[in-house]
Length: 202
Image 1: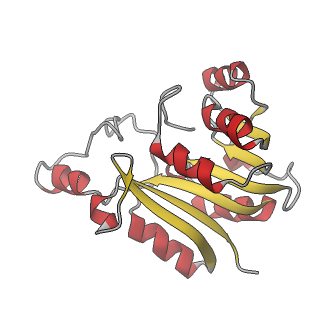
Image 2: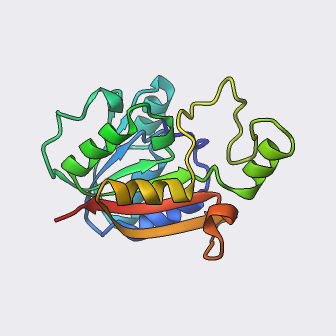
């Protein structure tokens, strides 16, 4: 379910790698070709698993040397014990799921915290293409046409902020990126990707 092209250099991977503690036990849901998990194992000495449903991506992840389980993450994660991972990662995956709230609840049950990266559909280029051009946006970050996009839910930075607030989810860290750099001024308008670290209230 991870939409990144194989081995693509992604700024959100840099942030995730910096935030994951050395030696952490990690679960990467929608791990794609396993690039992120392989990097965490190599650079942060992490241990863990990736979960992916796509046949080609599972094969690529195995070739990248990561432990990968082929499964639909929306089918439930009951085979993992509560708090069995230090970090659960959803990298460019959550927007392609249908039962988003239930999945986040599962993630925050099996993980002590979660790192989530999301495309920001509030970015000014998205607003311009839809508001002025009258068409669903297509860009380098969102290259799909309206009829073949894997994205199910279209959220903005402010949407996810409010979701966390309403559901009593603690936001430990947040960074909004554009062009590989952090955006602090008007992040909901100028940001392309948002990275969050969240956990349940203690």
